[in-house]
Every structure is written in C-alpha cells, then in structure tokens.
Image 1: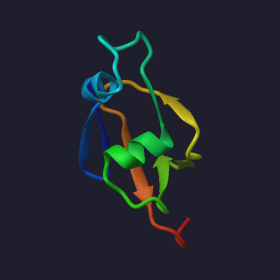
Image 2: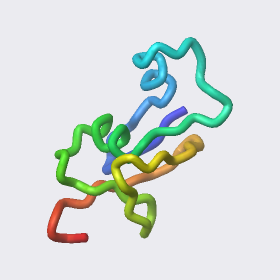
Image 3: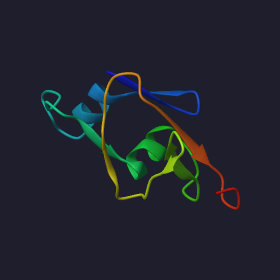
Image 4: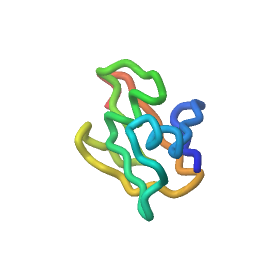
Length: 76
C-alpha cells in the first residue's frame, strides 16, 4: 500500500514494519504528523487532504493511492 504527499511516495507497509508491526492492520492509519515526517516536509507545514486541513494529531484511515499535500505557513 502506498500513499502520496507532494510527489513523495510513502510505503505504508514499511512505515508499520519500522514501528514493530508484523503485518498491516485491517484499517491502517497515520497521523498528519507521520505523513508530513514520512514525506520529509518541514515541521511548520500543514498537511491537507484535498481541501481539508489536518491537525498534527489527527489520524486518517488510509486507502491505497491516497494523496495529501503539505502547505507552507502563511498560505493556509
């Protein structure tokens, strides 16, 4: 399973393996903080899903191919 953020491909299976999970849960989730960090974006950028801004602690149920964007400060 892969998701995308500003052109970066995030391998969700690998993300979970690095955190000690043997297999992907039935409904994988990531927080906006995790998505931004995995996409190697600055900490002051805000993650958006479509036209919806996400808070750092907000968890999103993931599906294969989801797209996110990171918006720099003073533009959101």
